[in-house]
Length: 303
Image 1 (cartoon, helix red, strand yellow):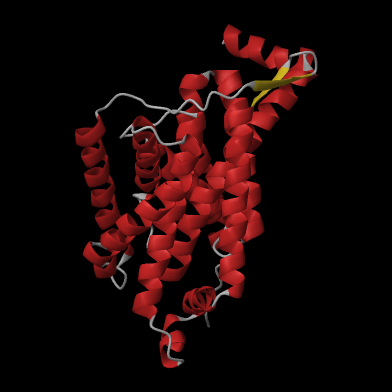
Image 2 (cartoon, rainbow, N blue to C red):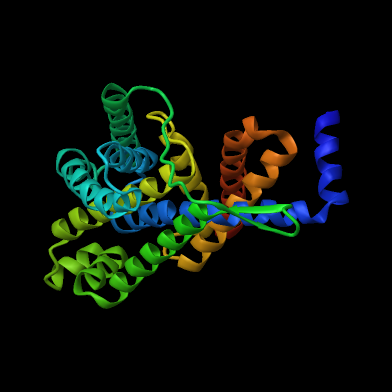
């Protein structure tokens, strides 16, 4: 308790620390937004709650890490992970996801949970259980007489995440497939009547989600650590963001992602880094309770 009070007093006595934590949180949240946007796509278009979301992220991180071990530039890992994880997503859709789209929620949760376990075990067998990261070798920028430090690697990661997110949004708004995805999300039956091949749309959507997660994982391995069983942490964060923002609410996803990144950083500073993942779980519970209360208030009696 004394340590928590000491950490709180530091935020009050040294306001510049709040700015440092906020900057770190925003940079982390920018990558959370990518993962959450992919989940929102799958959830909104296919009505599948993908519990393996985080494992696609970690898989992309290992693709990038493996490339670096072979002597390739680290930044090449992002586009390569995007392409490789697109293929992984397509295979996962054909073997698993396509069989649960029309099923109840429990079946889809069970199927994707099994997929998550399988992916984590495959990564563990291939790469071992040790944590891994990629060192870009870039310097750190210092501001406010050295009180604020911003690693250049993190800035590059945020920039790449922003470019990827903007590219996906542009694709969704301007391409024929993007229009088909949005039409299917609004009403799949009507989309089929209008001649849209919804099976192709579903496969494309899940593959795109997997590719986005893969690219996010390639960015994460450049600035943080990855490990085969870290996927659940990113899955929980994605569920918190999408549940808080609501499906189809892109500005809400961005705001929630950045906000949760900042809250986690402040929480880690106050309670300790060991509680960072617990903070994500607590946030998920709070969001679910708020959503439940809202649903009860909006419920009307039919006469």
